[in-house]
Length: 135
Image (cartoon, rainbow, N blue to C red; front, side, top):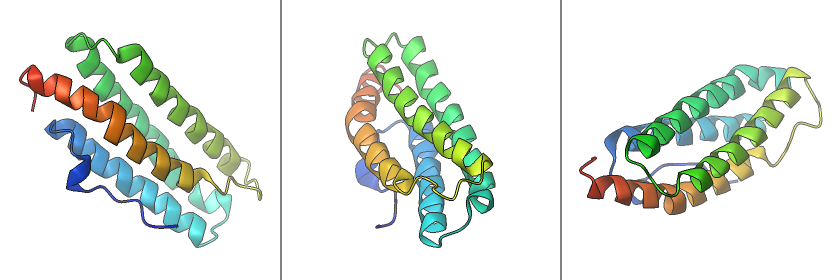
């Protein structure tokens, strides 16, 4: 699997959100590298917990912006956040159980989900916030 990297084409032009996206992509790439190195689930636990914690923090940030600026697409956006969060919690559960059948496709899911979510849903949010003077 290729690296999971943030680049300028993923910028939503809201500094706080872009900075958090950079961190999310870096955390996801760490998980990818750990899976490719065939680490045992318990060896990945701290990294998975960090990803889950940071994801919650990031989603709360976006949801705060959506609420403050009365973003009409908030409900659908939150549903996408929940989809990612549920997969992350499943992965965390497998790590906690030291499940030898640890989800092989989680890093691929993250790469696909992050890129699609940022390029689609978050770009729409960024444009909306930019029109309201948020940068």
